[in-house]
Structure formats: C-alpha cells, structure tokens
Length: 553
Image (cartoon, rainbow, N blue to C red):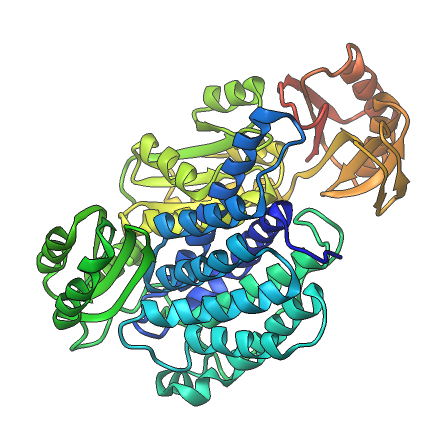
C-alpha cells in the first residue's frame, strides 16, 4: 500500500485504467444514450486513456537513458499523462476525461502526491471538467466527478482511504444519474461517461493499494445492473443515428491558440451547435462540438489559432457504414485477408506462407489500437479476420475494430489466446467461403486447440501450482500455471501428458529463441509413447516470450 503517489504509481494507474476500460468498453458503449446515442463512449474513453498511458511509458523510456533503474519524477509523469490524454482525446467524453486528468495533474505536479494533495487534485479535476463543458448537465461524468471529489475531501485518513472513498462515492453517484437526467431514466441506464470515470477511479484506488496490472489480485468489483438496459445498438448491431433536430456532424481538432482567443471561440462555436467541450491550456487545446456546418466550426478554429488533426464525422453516414454488409443473405465482396499478430521471425514466416498479413509484435510492448488499425488498413482488404494470439490484445483490438467498421471495413476479431490457436484457425481459412462461414470455421478450429507454453520464472511468485522460484520452469496450460519443474524437457513431458490425457490427434510444437537442441525430438517421442496414433509437427517460431509453445488438437 502506498502512502504517497509517485511516477511508478501513476504508470500503474494508467495501465490499470486502460485494462479496466478495455474490459468495460462494450458495456459502456451500450450505455451511451447521451448526448448522442452513437455507441462509442467506451471506445473513446479507452482510446483517450491509451494515449495517456503511452505518454507516461515514453517518460519512463526517456528516463532510462540516465540508467536502467531511473524513473521520471511525479510531476513529469502526471504532466505526460494529461498531455497524452489531451492530444489523443476522442469524442465528447474523451475530451472531458482529458481535462479531468489535466486538473488532477496541475495539483499533483506542483504540490506532491500525499493524501492532502490527492484531495485537492480531485477537487481541481472536477472543477476543470465543469469548466471545459459549455453547458454542464447533471447526471453525467461531471456529477460523478464532483461527488467523488466532495467525499474524498471530507475523508479523514491516508492516501489509500482517500482514493477508495473517491471510488466508492463515484459508484454511488453513478447509480443516481438516471434520477438526474431524463434520457437515462427513459433508457433504463446509467451515464456512460460516468461509468468510465468509475473505472478510472477504481484503477487509481487499486494502484494506491499496491495492485498491479498483471498481478493476482482481483480488481474492483463490477457495478450491479441498473434497470432494464436498452443498448445504444439495435438487434443487428447497428449504431442508432441521432434523432431529428440533432446536429449532423461531430467536429474535433487540436488547436494551437493563446488563452485570450478562447472566449471568442467558445462564443462562436456555441452559436453553431451543441456538445461543446474545449479542454487544455498553455496554448494547446482540444476542441469538440456537434454542428450542422462543419466548415464553419473549423473556420472558427482558424480565426482563433492553428487547428490540426481535424476529424469530422457525419453521424448518419458513420451509422450506415458501421452496419454496411451486415444484412443477411448478402453476397460477400471480394478482397478478404487474415491479419495475424505474432512475435518471432519464424512464426511470422509461417503465417505469411499460409497467406496471412502479419503484424510483428514487440514482446515488451503489445501493439496499441492505432497500430492494429494501421496494420488492417495496410492489408487493403474490405474484409479482415484478425488473429490476436494473445489475450492481452482483446481490448485494443476491439477499439480498433470499431474505428475500422466506421470506415467501411468488415472485420472479425478472433480472440485466439496463443499462436498455436492462430495457426489452427489459419489452416482452415478459405477466402472463397462467405465471410460469416469462414469466421465460424476458423473460430471452431481455434477453440478445438488446447494450448500451453513453457516459461522461465523471473522471481519468487505464488501460482496455481504452488510457489515458484527464480529459474524454475513453468508449464502453463490454457493460461494457468499447472506445472513447476526444474528443466524444460521434464516440465514439457508433464504438460504434454496432461494435455493428451484428455485426447488429441495432432501435437504442434513451436520452438522459441534459445530452445535447447533435441527438446522437440524428446517431447515428440514422449507423446508417441503415450499415444502412438498422435501426429506431431515442429516449427521454429523464434519467439522471445516462451522457449516452447504447445498445441493439441
């Protein structure tokens, strides 16, 4: 448990917030009925925090130039978090969250990371969020932020108590939002943006409590269901476009402009439309507004300073693109490809020879949603099946898929958890089949493949199989540690025996970088002694993450 926030704690907070929003992304998207029922609040919040987390990671990378154990100070970390969120903010909710993070950073960067400073930071964050919104409405993110700040300010105790109090207060405030905003009550949902803030505050409380993104401690419990959820998507998965009378376009851009230019800009944009949010400061701003005249909104930015990274979304067209190609009975267009995310030159070569496009993943830094989306665009296909081969990529891939569907790409993300499942899916891929049939066949092949891997423990840790020490060989089956051994061959034999005890016809072994000579031959011989009828294939994968990957079909 921490008594003072420092840069590593901010890093952990960002990682936990990204994980929590990734898990809740689709739920939050479905809650999105205000201000526009376009079903993207969860995705926008995820992308905003992803940008914040990436900026914080960059500060740690830069600090390591001074030494492998060097880290940035608290001020640099929180300023990077706030700036990253501002630059990467998506949608109305993302800009408000970015401004809330900026308010938090303003206090923590100058005053420190103690309990009193966190109380002040949460108050400043809520105030900043209100100031960013041209017409604040209760029953939204703003209400949840204010309630969290008020109760945290009154909490007598240390840092952990203050953070947990803010989280618990936010939960309670969120459950009250349908009583404060009629559109939420009519839909039977809580506010989507407020739900996202609860996830962020839960991540802060977990970071202060000493939890880690990959640790064994369960994170904050999910919220109970509120009312009869009416999602912001119809039964076919189409986003509902805004109703009559709502502005047709969403305009968002970054703006370099002096503070003195902001009052006139706010006045002009407020006269053009609604949902106006301007966040930022010190000459850099993110502008968001819903208007009928997108050109006029951009021109207002030109008059104030230099707008760039301009994104204009036509709500009705985005809804139509998101649903295009989903009608049953439609003949599928040509131009389908499979994108496989892998680490290791050998694995990449296997996938490419099987006809897939490949995104090379850094084992120390999984690809972000923008990298996944860029890889799909480079593939240049109208239909794409993505093989993730890593459970940690599901949230980023989901966010990328939502963006790509708005661009007219028909995309299916198969949550393959290991490259052996990805190879099994790729083996049955047939581009001549209808898209849905191909996805079903590939999903079935992946699901029928049990997976395991051998890894070497880096330190003492509790596992499902007991306590391991540094240097122990861990045998993971379906993602859980099932065996702790002293050497690769012996541990591999035990893992294979357990997997084959449940049946299997084909064993796949993928050797990683540094796998000892003769390992594959020994394991194949062991498998055939146990089940003579089993076929076995061996590939050189070259992955750094695990000396051996195992698949049983």
